[in-house]
Length: 118
Image (cartoon, rainbow, N blue to C red; front, top):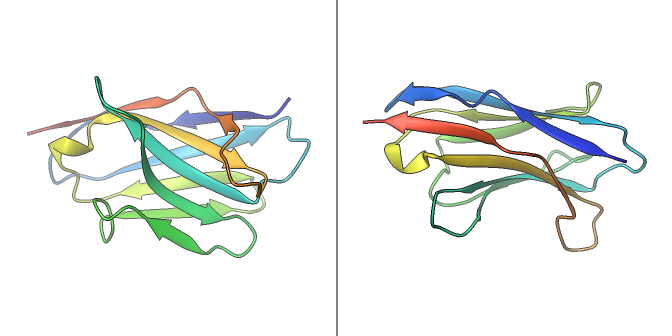
């Protein structure tokens, strides 16, 4: 069964940078789209960024546009989220997810905690 494993979350000061990774393993099918989502305590999970795996086309939530960059390494089947100019409101558990191009994200990682201190 396909597994997605996030890593890289930690405590970082406001204005700092952090890179998250999402490694895949046990893949049976290639994902059409992969994305990053985040969830703060007591809040709904929200979209952060997505990438069309093959084409590399990206899309970002307005709240992170121009600060975050999503990318992927095709050879390593790994997705990254480079986060710059971090703000306290970026504090959340960050999840990577994948879909098979059918309109929903059906595969999720376990999440990695990102805490941005003021």
